[in-house]
Image 1 (cartoon, rainbow, N blue to C red):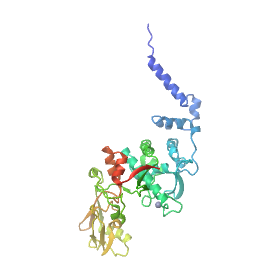
Image 2 (image 1 turned 135 degrees about the vertical axis):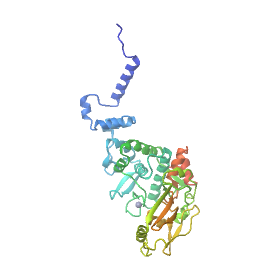
Image 3 (image 1 turned 90 degrees about the vertical axis):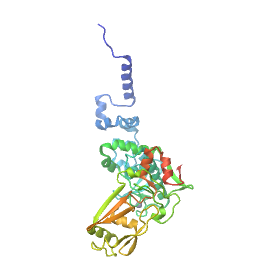
Image 4 (image 1 turned 180 degrees about the vertical axis):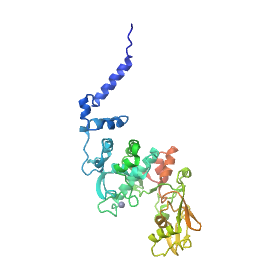
Length: 373
Ligand SMILES: [Zn+2]
Protein backbone atom coordinates (compact mmCIF):
# COMPACT_ATOMS: atom_id res chain seq x y z
CA UNK A 1 0.00 0.00 0.00
CA UNK A 2 1.30 3.47 -0.91
CA UNK A 3 2.02 5.72 2.10
CA UNK A 4 0.90 9.34 1.97
CA UNK A 5 3.76 11.71 2.80
CA UNK A 6 3.12 15.39 3.42
CA UNK A 7 3.82 17.48 0.31
CA UNK A 8 7.38 18.74 -0.07
CA UNK A 9 6.34 22.41 0.14
CA UNK A 10 4.74 21.83 3.53
CA UNK A 11 7.85 20.18 4.92
CA UNK A 12 9.99 23.01 3.55
CA UNK A 13 7.69 25.60 5.09
CA UNK A 14 7.81 23.92 8.52
CA UNK A 15 11.62 23.72 8.33
CA UNK A 16 11.84 27.39 7.32
CA UNK A 17 9.61 28.44 10.21
CA UNK A 18 11.69 26.41 12.66
CA UNK A 19 14.87 27.92 11.27
CA UNK A 20 13.50 31.45 11.56
CA UNK A 21 12.28 30.67 15.07
CA UNK A 22 15.75 29.58 16.01
CA UNK A 23 17.50 32.51 14.27
CA UNK A 24 15.35 34.87 16.29
CA UNK A 25 16.71 33.28 19.41
CA UNK A 26 13.28 32.06 20.40
CA UNK A 27 13.05 29.39 23.06
CA UNK A 28 12.80 25.74 22.06
CA UNK A 29 13.67 23.62 25.06
CA UNK A 30 11.68 23.67 28.28
CA UNK A 31 14.73 25.13 30.02
CA UNK A 32 14.82 28.05 27.56
CA UNK A 33 11.12 28.67 28.14
CA UNK A 34 11.54 28.69 31.89
CA UNK A 35 14.50 31.09 31.54
CA UNK A 36 12.29 33.68 29.85
CA UNK A 37 11.95 36.69 32.09
CA UNK A 38 8.73 37.61 30.37
CA UNK A 39 5.47 35.76 30.98
CA UNK A 40 4.59 33.76 27.92
CA UNK A 41 1.17 35.41 27.57
CA UNK A 42 2.95 38.65 26.82
CA UNK A 43 4.96 36.98 24.11
CA UNK A 44 1.74 35.73 22.60
CA UNK A 45 0.42 39.29 22.41
CA UNK A 46 3.56 40.51 20.74
CA UNK A 47 3.93 37.78 18.16
CA UNK A 48 1.67 39.27 15.48
CA UNK A 49 3.59 42.54 15.69
CA UNK A 50 6.78 43.44 13.98
CA UNK A 51 9.85 41.24 14.22
CA UNK A 52 11.81 43.81 16.17
CA UNK A 53 9.40 43.36 19.02
CA UNK A 54 10.05 39.65 18.96
CA UNK A 55 13.75 40.37 18.96
CA UNK A 56 13.39 42.78 21.86
CA UNK A 57 11.33 40.32 23.83
CA UNK A 58 13.59 37.34 23.37
CA UNK A 59 16.97 39.00 23.31
CA UNK A 60 16.81 41.17 26.42
CA UNK A 61 20.59 41.60 26.41
CA UNK A 62 20.33 43.81 23.31
CA UNK A 63 17.99 46.27 25.01
CA UNK A 64 19.60 49.50 26.03
CA UNK A 65 18.62 50.10 29.61
CA UNK A 66 16.95 53.49 29.94
CA UNK A 67 18.81 56.05 31.94
CA UNK A 68 17.39 56.81 35.37
CA UNK A 69 16.06 60.19 34.21
CA UNK A 70 13.96 58.60 31.49
CA UNK A 71 10.32 58.89 32.29
CA UNK A 72 9.28 55.82 30.43
CA UNK A 73 11.26 53.35 32.49
CA UNK A 74 9.10 53.95 35.52
CA UNK A 75 6.27 51.78 34.42
CA UNK A 76 7.94 50.06 31.52
CA UNK A 77 6.77 46.54 30.71
CA UNK A 78 8.19 44.35 28.01
CA UNK A 79 5.35 45.48 25.78
CA UNK A 80 6.38 49.10 26.22
CA UNK A 81 9.93 48.60 25.10
CA UNK A 82 9.18 49.57 21.57
CA UNK A 83 8.83 53.07 22.94
CA UNK A 84 12.43 52.89 24.04
CA UNK A 85 13.61 53.87 20.57
CA UNK A 86 11.92 57.21 21.22
CA UNK A 87 12.45 57.51 24.91
CA UNK A 88 16.01 56.39 25.61
CA UNK A 89 18.11 59.46 26.12
CA UNK A 90 21.13 59.28 23.85
CA UNK A 91 23.65 61.90 22.77
CA UNK A 92 22.06 62.61 19.41
CA UNK A 93 18.52 63.12 20.69
CA UNK A 94 16.96 66.43 21.63
CA UNK A 95 15.59 66.42 25.18
CA UNK A 96 13.17 68.55 27.15
CA UNK A 97 12.76 69.29 30.82
CA UNK A 98 9.10 68.52 31.41
CA UNK A 99 7.18 69.35 34.57
CA UNK A 100 4.97 66.31 35.05
CA UNK A 101 1.89 67.79 36.71
CA UNK A 102 0.45 64.31 37.38
CA UNK A 103 3.37 63.48 39.67
CA UNK A 104 4.48 67.01 40.61
CA UNK A 105 8.03 66.51 39.43
CA UNK A 106 10.48 67.68 36.82
CA UNK A 107 11.79 65.00 34.45
CA UNK A 108 14.06 65.00 31.44
CA UNK A 109 12.68 63.19 28.42
CA UNK A 110 13.47 62.95 24.75
CA UNK A 111 11.58 65.27 22.46
CA UNK A 112 10.08 62.40 20.45
CA UNK A 113 9.07 60.45 23.55
CA UNK A 114 7.40 63.59 24.82
CA UNK A 115 5.54 64.04 21.51
CA UNK A 116 4.17 60.48 21.81
CA UNK A 117 2.71 61.33 25.22
CA UNK A 118 1.23 64.61 23.96
CA UNK A 119 -0.37 62.89 21.01
CA UNK A 120 -1.92 60.29 23.32
CA UNK A 121 -3.33 63.01 25.58
CA UNK A 122 -4.39 65.62 23.08
CA UNK A 123 -6.00 63.68 20.21
CA UNK A 124 -8.11 60.50 20.13
CA UNK A 125 -5.75 57.75 18.95
CA UNK A 126 -8.53 56.35 16.77
CA UNK A 127 -8.31 59.38 14.46
CA UNK A 128 -6.98 58.94 10.93
CA UNK A 129 -3.25 58.50 10.66
CA UNK A 130 -2.70 61.79 8.81
CA UNK A 131 -4.61 63.70 11.48
CA UNK A 132 -2.34 62.07 14.07
CA UNK A 133 0.73 63.03 12.04
CA UNK A 134 -0.49 66.64 11.78
CA UNK A 135 -0.99 66.68 15.54
CA UNK A 136 2.48 65.23 16.11
CA UNK A 137 4.11 68.04 14.09
CA UNK A 138 1.96 70.61 15.90
CA UNK A 139 2.84 69.21 19.33
CA UNK A 140 6.58 69.06 18.55
CA UNK A 141 6.59 72.61 17.18
CA UNK A 142 4.78 73.89 20.23
CA UNK A 143 7.31 72.27 22.57
CA UNK A 144 10.38 73.62 20.77
CA UNK A 145 8.83 77.06 20.35
CA UNK A 146 8.21 77.19 24.07
CA UNK A 147 11.68 75.89 24.92
CA UNK A 148 13.14 78.70 22.81
CA UNK A 149 10.85 81.30 24.36
CA UNK A 150 11.92 80.76 27.96
CA UNK A 151 10.00 77.63 28.98
CA UNK A 152 6.99 77.17 31.24
CA UNK A 153 6.25 80.28 33.28
CA UNK A 154 4.75 78.36 36.19
CA UNK A 155 7.43 75.80 36.93
CA UNK A 156 11.04 76.82 37.34
CA UNK A 157 13.48 74.82 35.26
CA UNK A 158 10.74 73.35 33.07
CA UNK A 159 10.67 73.88 29.31
CA UNK A 160 7.03 72.85 29.31
CA UNK A 161 4.45 71.46 31.73
CA UNK A 162 1.81 68.76 31.23
CA UNK A 163 -1.09 70.88 32.43
CA UNK A 164 -3.18 71.12 29.26
CA UNK A 165 -4.72 74.44 30.25
CA UNK A 166 -1.27 75.97 30.80
CA UNK A 167 1.18 74.39 28.34
CA UNK A 168 0.30 71.12 26.63
CA UNK A 169 -1.36 67.89 27.79
CA UNK A 170 0.73 64.74 28.15
CA UNK A 171 -0.34 61.18 29.00
CA UNK A 172 2.01 58.93 30.98
CA UNK A 173 2.20 55.24 30.11
CA UNK A 174 0.03 54.43 33.10
CA UNK A 175 -2.59 56.86 31.83
CA UNK A 176 -2.34 55.38 28.33
CA UNK A 177 -2.96 51.92 29.77
CA UNK A 178 -6.06 53.01 31.64
CA UNK A 179 -7.32 55.12 28.73
CA UNK A 180 -6.90 52.44 26.06
CA UNK A 181 -7.43 49.24 28.07
CA UNK A 182 -7.45 46.20 25.82
CA UNK A 183 -6.77 48.38 22.77
CA UNK A 184 -3.48 49.57 24.25
CA UNK A 185 -1.24 47.78 21.76
CA UNK A 186 -3.16 49.01 18.74
CA UNK A 187 -3.37 52.63 19.84
CA UNK A 188 0.25 52.74 20.96
CA UNK A 189 1.23 51.55 17.50
CA UNK A 190 -0.88 54.25 15.85
CA UNK A 191 0.62 56.98 18.02
CA UNK A 192 4.24 55.88 17.71
CA UNK A 193 4.03 55.42 13.96
CA UNK A 194 2.58 58.94 13.52
CA UNK A 195 5.48 60.34 15.55
CA UNK A 196 7.98 58.16 13.73
CA UNK A 197 6.71 59.25 10.29
CA UNK A 198 7.15 62.94 11.15
CA UNK A 199 10.28 62.76 13.27
CA UNK A 200 12.16 66.11 13.57
CA UNK A 201 9.51 67.94 11.51
CA UNK A 202 8.56 71.44 12.64
CA UNK A 203 6.22 74.12 11.33
CA UNK A 204 7.76 77.43 10.32
CA UNK A 205 6.60 80.76 8.91
CA UNK A 206 9.28 82.96 7.32
CA UNK A 207 11.91 80.56 8.69
CA UNK A 208 10.69 81.07 12.26
CA UNK A 209 8.99 78.43 14.35
CA UNK A 210 5.32 79.21 14.69
CA UNK A 211 3.26 79.59 17.85
CA UNK A 212 1.02 76.56 17.50
CA UNK A 213 -2.56 76.65 18.70
CA UNK A 214 -5.13 73.91 18.22
CA UNK A 215 -8.50 72.90 19.59
CA UNK A 216 -10.96 70.01 19.48
CA UNK A 217 -13.64 71.24 17.06
CA UNK A 218 -14.06 74.65 15.45
CA UNK A 219 -17.79 74.53 14.78
CA UNK A 220 -17.29 75.06 11.03
CA UNK A 221 -14.89 78.04 10.93
CA UNK A 222 -11.72 78.62 12.90
CA UNK A 223 -11.16 81.90 14.72
CA UNK A 224 -8.39 84.42 14.03
CA UNK A 225 -5.88 84.72 16.87
CA UNK A 226 -6.49 88.43 17.26
CA UNK A 227 -10.13 88.02 18.25
CA UNK A 228 -9.28 85.58 21.05
CA UNK A 229 -5.81 86.61 22.14
CA UNK A 230 -5.92 90.26 21.03
CA UNK A 231 -2.79 90.14 18.89
CA UNK A 232 -2.84 89.32 15.20
CA UNK A 233 -0.74 86.40 13.96
CA UNK A 234 -0.36 86.01 10.17
CA UNK A 235 -0.62 82.22 10.17
CA UNK A 236 -3.49 82.02 12.70
CA UNK A 237 -6.29 83.42 10.58
CA UNK A 238 -9.88 82.28 10.24
CA UNK A 239 -10.35 79.39 7.77
CA UNK A 240 -13.29 77.14 7.00
CA UNK A 241 -13.37 73.69 8.56
CA UNK A 242 -16.03 71.94 6.56
CA UNK A 243 -17.74 68.68 7.33
CA UNK A 244 -17.70 69.11 11.10
CA UNK A 245 -21.51 69.34 11.30
CA UNK A 246 -21.72 65.57 11.20
CA UNK A 247 -19.31 65.11 14.12
CA UNK A 248 -20.64 64.12 17.49
CA UNK A 249 -20.89 67.09 19.85
CA UNK A 250 -21.02 69.71 17.09
CA UNK A 251 -24.02 71.25 18.86
CA UNK A 252 -24.34 70.84 22.61
CA UNK A 253 -26.67 72.35 25.18
CA UNK A 254 -25.65 73.11 28.76
CA UNK A 255 -28.39 74.03 31.21
CA UNK A 256 -27.85 75.72 34.58
CA UNK A 257 -30.46 76.66 37.16
CA UNK A 258 -30.27 80.37 38.05
CA UNK A 259 -28.73 79.33 41.35
CA UNK A 260 -26.01 77.23 39.73
CA UNK A 261 -25.16 79.90 37.16
CA UNK A 262 -25.02 82.63 39.82
CA UNK A 263 -22.75 80.56 42.04
CA UNK A 264 -20.26 79.83 39.25
CA UNK A 265 -20.25 83.41 37.97
CA UNK A 266 -19.86 84.83 41.48
CA UNK A 267 -16.81 82.64 41.96
CA UNK A 268 -15.13 84.07 38.84
CA UNK A 269 -16.46 87.63 39.24
CA UNK A 270 -16.88 88.05 43.01
CA UNK A 271 -17.38 91.82 42.99
CA UNK A 272 -20.26 91.87 40.50
CA UNK A 273 -22.95 90.95 43.04
CA UNK A 274 -24.56 88.25 40.88
CA UNK A 275 -27.28 86.26 42.63
CA UNK A 276 -29.82 83.65 41.59
CA UNK A 277 -32.49 86.37 41.52
CA UNK A 278 -30.52 88.77 39.34
CA UNK A 279 -28.52 86.53 37.04
CA UNK A 280 -31.10 86.41 34.27
CA UNK A 281 -31.42 90.22 34.03
CA UNK A 282 -27.72 90.90 34.51
CA UNK A 283 -26.59 88.89 31.51
CA UNK A 284 -26.34 90.49 28.05
CA UNK A 285 -24.46 89.49 24.92
CA UNK A 286 -22.24 92.25 23.55
CA UNK A 287 -20.24 92.06 20.32
CA UNK A 288 -19.71 89.12 18.03
CA UNK A 289 -16.51 88.22 16.17
CA UNK A 290 -16.67 88.04 12.36
CA UNK A 291 -17.08 84.24 12.55
CA UNK A 292 -20.13 84.42 14.82
CA UNK A 293 -18.54 83.71 18.18
CA UNK A 294 -19.23 86.04 21.06
CA UNK A 295 -16.42 88.49 21.72
CA UNK A 296 -17.65 90.20 24.89
CA UNK A 297 -20.64 90.33 27.19
CA UNK A 298 -22.16 92.50 29.87
CA UNK A 299 -22.47 90.91 33.28
CA UNK A 300 -24.07 93.00 36.02
CA UNK A 301 -23.15 96.13 34.04
CA UNK A 302 -19.48 95.11 33.64
CA UNK A 303 -17.99 94.33 30.25
CA UNK A 304 -16.25 90.95 30.28
CA UNK A 305 -14.58 88.80 27.64
CA UNK A 306 -16.66 85.89 26.41
CA UNK A 307 -13.62 83.66 26.94
CA UNK A 308 -13.69 84.50 30.68
CA UNK A 309 -17.43 83.89 30.80
CA UNK A 310 -16.91 80.55 29.08
CA UNK A 311 -14.26 79.59 31.62
CA UNK A 312 -16.50 80.51 34.56
CA UNK A 313 -19.31 78.23 33.41
CA UNK A 314 -17.12 75.58 31.79
CA UNK A 315 -18.83 76.03 28.42
CA UNK A 316 -17.45 74.22 25.39
CA UNK A 317 -17.02 77.34 23.27
CA UNK A 318 -17.85 81.03 22.94
CA UNK A 319 -19.94 80.25 19.87
CA UNK A 320 -23.32 80.06 21.59
CA UNK A 321 -26.80 81.47 21.93
CA UNK A 322 -28.80 81.33 25.11
CA UNK A 323 -32.38 80.83 26.15
CA UNK A 324 -34.06 81.00 29.53
CA UNK A 325 -37.19 79.64 31.14
CA UNK A 326 -38.64 80.41 34.54
CA UNK A 327 -35.84 78.68 36.45
CA UNK A 328 -32.85 78.06 34.23
CA UNK A 329 -30.53 79.26 31.45
CA UNK A 330 -29.52 77.04 28.55
CA UNK A 331 -26.46 77.70 26.39
CA UNK A 332 -26.69 76.28 22.87
CA UNK A 333 -23.05 75.84 21.90
CA UNK A 334 -21.30 75.08 18.68
CA UNK A 335 -17.83 73.46 18.44
CA UNK A 336 -15.41 72.79 21.27
CA UNK A 337 -12.43 74.90 22.28
CA UNK A 338 -11.08 78.40 21.59
CA UNK A 339 -11.31 77.84 17.83
CA UNK A 340 -7.82 79.14 16.94
CA UNK A 341 -5.45 77.14 14.71
CA UNK A 342 -6.03 73.52 13.78
CA UNK A 343 -9.40 71.95 14.47
CA UNK A 344 -8.70 68.34 15.42
CA UNK A 345 -12.09 67.12 14.25
CA UNK A 346 -11.59 69.11 11.03
CA UNK A 347 -8.14 67.55 10.59
CA UNK A 348 -9.66 64.10 11.03
CA UNK A 349 -12.32 64.86 8.40
CA UNK A 350 -9.69 66.18 5.96
CA UNK A 351 -7.61 63.03 6.52
CA UNK A 352 -10.67 60.84 5.98
CA UNK A 353 -11.23 62.65 2.68
CA UNK A 354 -7.68 61.89 1.54
CA UNK A 355 -5.69 64.96 2.61
CA UNK A 356 -2.16 64.40 3.81
CA UNK A 357 -0.90 65.81 7.09
CA UNK A 358 1.06 68.39 5.12
CA UNK A 359 -2.14 69.58 3.44
CA UNK A 360 -3.95 69.63 6.78
CA UNK A 361 -1.25 71.74 8.43
CA UNK A 362 -1.02 74.08 5.43
CA UNK A 363 -4.79 74.58 5.62
CA UNK A 364 -5.03 75.44 9.31
CA UNK A 365 -1.71 77.32 9.60
CA UNK A 366 -1.76 79.64 6.58
CA UNK A 367 1.52 80.24 4.81
CA UNK A 368 3.55 77.83 6.95
CA UNK A 369 5.93 75.13 5.74
CA UNK A 370 7.30 71.99 7.35
CA UNK A 371 11.01 71.94 7.95
CA UNK A 372 13.27 69.25 9.36
CA UNK A 373 14.93 70.28 12.56
ZN1 LIG B 1 3.25 75.29 31.83
